[in-house]
Length: 169
Image (cartoon, rainbow, N blue to C red; front, top):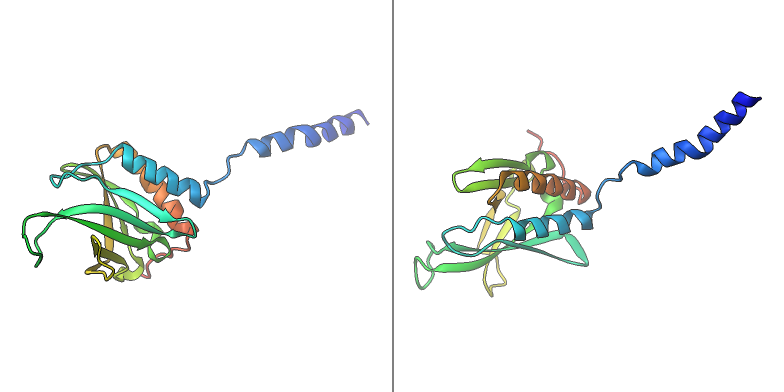
């Protein structure tokens, strides 16, 4: 009888506490905010002089936008000039297994690829409504590898929550 009493107390009080302390996986919103804040705090500023910035629409959080700039090597009016661009990426079209943080010459990079290498990353020139290029992957630049690795974990989580699927091969 005494053993039953202590067993009942153990089940009633100790097990719920242990379960409550188990951390829940981060939500999509928490993952996106972590990504935004980390990219802003630890960016790699390329020679173009502009940091990447991340944003999303409240009503469509799986579609992210990354503002960046690049040196114009296309058929724009002034070749060699820095051009502001926006990349749009729907995280549900990305492969969560492809998200990797690597050391680069300039710092660190997090790369994500579209599922089955489809061209699902769209680049828009500033103030244009039509995309000018499509890509199969995208790279986020960082000045520290440890922050890039944590960003990669958050990005992988966000891709998974948005329904991203592994590539077939």
